[in-house]
Length: 136
Image 1 (tube, rainbow, N blue to C red):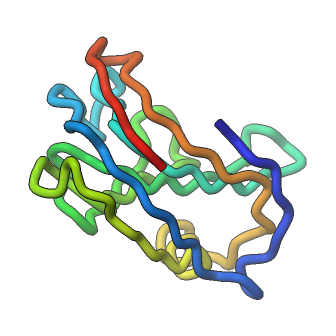
Image 2: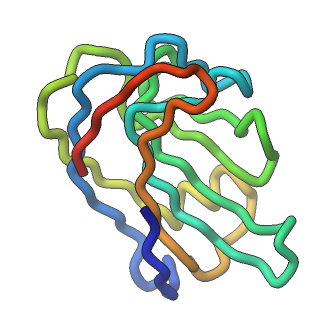
């Protein structure tokens, strides 16, 4: 589910959301293509005139990646995965998150971000074949 939006993170750097997952994706692994599944994730998309230069930050509820750890997506170097939550300890609870998207982009891509073009939510298990339930 995505929402097209056009805004500058320099003016509005903070993204806040609430989410809850029923359980984590047990076979999920942010470092492998066949494990790139999460009970919950928030995408912030930074489009480019050239599609292949589009960048994204994915705030994920990981199963193995430690909370606070960031890795490059196993599918593209233009997408960063940041484990905002990890593991089972908070499953079944509503958790409020707050991120500075401007600073996250700058830290992981080494430059100021372009304008945001979309924000999306996603619960996916296409690579592991597991089931997941999340609320946003």
